[in-house]
Image (cartoon, rainbow, N blue to C red):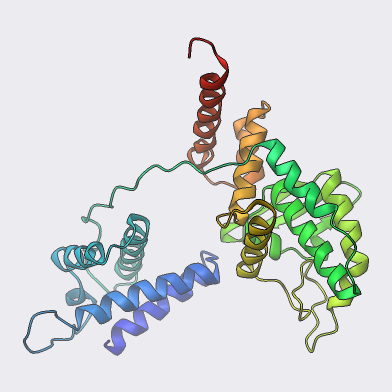
Amino acid sequence: MRAEIQSAIDRFLEYLRAQRNYSPHTLRNYRSDLETFFDCRRQPRRAGPASAPADLATAASYRKIRDYLGTLYQERRKPATVARKLAALRSFYRFACREGLATGNPAKLVSTPRQPQRLPQVMSPEEMNRLLDTVASRPPADSPRQAALAARDRLLLELLYGSGLRASEVVGLNLSDLRLPEQVLLARGKGRKEREVPFGDRAREALEAWLPLRSALRAGKRPESEAVFLNASGTRLTARSAGRIVKQYGIRLRGDSTLHPHSFRHAFATHLLGEGADLRAIQELLGHASLSTTQKYTRVSIRHLMEVYDKAHPRA
């Protein structure tokens, strides 16, 4: 890859980080997508001399991008992955045009691949309560360290369901973000947008059980003083580790290896909607920028009603 293109990518990612508040995870994906595309253009599949692009104006074109997407389809990449890579190119060239690094956006005319509309699988309120009650009623651990880990895991699951937080939001919580008397927490969502979210009595009980035991995990070399959730080494729990914890409980207690933090978020929204909560209020609680994102839960709720109808109505 020519130095000019690498420099443009670095400038673009710094803009996303500093001005748009993109998460480190998104920045890593964008860097990988862009560097993979431009490296790919330097390695033609047919025999012949390699011709590296000299600048952004010749590095990509409508046909080149279409060929690249075709290669991704041949590799059986998911439509969501292909769409993300195309979105990265569009955003990059939009930035390059604005900064005078390119004269046009070749990705603008490429159609976004159609993605299947898949509704999330959601546990019923009874199943969710059974899972959380089982976690809360586990026998006492043998050591203070194990007791602390068990209390942390219980709080993690309670907040994921009780407040509908994303995995990144729940592990990003600091002690100063919690207001116990009001049972409200400050969540930092996508783009570092802040919102206040309530949590219930069960989550408060789990929090009060965890905080006195938290010091048992702060004996590491670099103990974390602010993070609510700590790993076994005493540093802040990561979203990836939170996902592993949820999956372990899903396998152990439900025999379900597909359980993940977003399963609790889906259940949070669907159960609120099923009990008559206003869609706008659910949007605010979830931190969705667009109401259309929240509206997918109406389809989940209707699907559940149809299942109940089919099972219970004598003329179904």
